[in-house]
Length: 380
Ligand SMILES: NC(=O)c1ccc[n+]([C@@H]2O[C@H](COP(=O)([O-])OP(=O)(O)OC[C@H]3O[C@@H](n4cnc5c(N)ncnc54)[C@H](OP(=O)(O)O)[C@@H]3O)[C@@H](O)[C@H]2O)c1
View 1 (cartoon, rainbow, N blue to C red):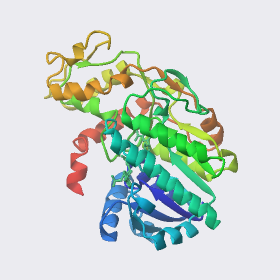
View 2 (view 1 turned 45 degrees about the vertical axis):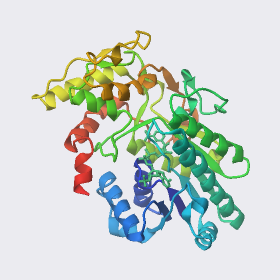
View 3 (view 1 turned 90 degrees about the horizontal axis):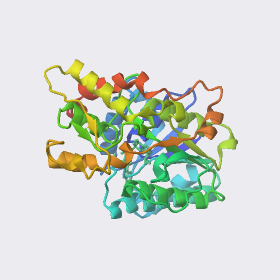
View 4 (view 1 turned 30 degrees about the horizontal axis):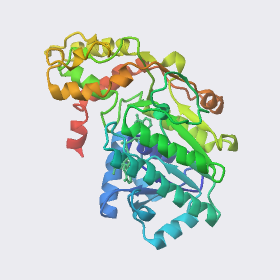
């Protein structure tokens, strides 16, 4: 891939891994990265830490030559860029990758809307400006498979996002953002990527933050829970960070056929995992690796069972209980994500999603090695 890429979210898991992936390619483009920081030095420090953590084998000094950092914030007018920078950058960029988002599940509605909807609007305004300047070739919008909200069963890539209900403000704001992007698709060369639940790298376990899937696992490791608010045969679709970045990179660099399409970056029907199997393997792993800890067996409480999981007898602290209750919609769902477009686009690439259990111990080992991310912060 050649050209000039403008990327948001490079200090995040997917954006950071994607930047590393792009830089490792034989021919890599020039990268302009929008980073939240007060100064270029601050932005550089933040990016270096991210790249060192996610991709320690990357040659950072060679990488720096390809990268221009701009300080900004997608929620601000012109993303916080001066009018001169905004116009100049728009006249240079050939590709826009929008990966920045507020990703905590339980955000205040105003924050979710401001970052995920209005931030996306600002990035797309920039893309329009770049298209007007004449060099823009492609845009990647990183959405989420969970724009499907509370729908269950088979979820298709061509789902046109009719109004629906959502589990939390993260999902609903990402749905609003994708609706916005879909509306402008006829005018701009967009590809939409919808990852499912992203875990650490399948070979190293590396990841920056330990939210989502990691939250219940962390409580299990602490011996702090013996009940989870879910059903044993709920299905979780999890993909590792390396697969997510490799697949997005390959498809985004691929043929023009992908323009206007949506790609599920998912494990899919055969590689989604039952929640009881995930929990049983985690308990076994934690007991083996931390024999001094008492890790109780975990029961699942059906949501209709009047909230047994809320009682302090079932969970050791009210705080943990209320955090875990927020995961109930994920621990009771039976969503299967279809990935026909992705499978077609990846044909012959050798890139395919591994099943969670082929790398589960690797991501658990990294979680324990870094004390669920604390050691990453300490080392920075
Ligand atoms: N991780 C998953 O399981 C998952 C699954 C499906 C879809 N996705 C989607 O994939 C994308 C990337 O997710 P991720 O896991 O990489 O998220 P992440 O690790 O939380 O990173 C979020 C990134 O967005 C940036 N950001 C947040 N608010 C911003 C703002 N106002 N201005 C500029 N940058 C801002 C963050 O910058 P700071 O470092 O300054 O905070 C960070 O670089 C998101 O669109 C997310 O919805 C993620």
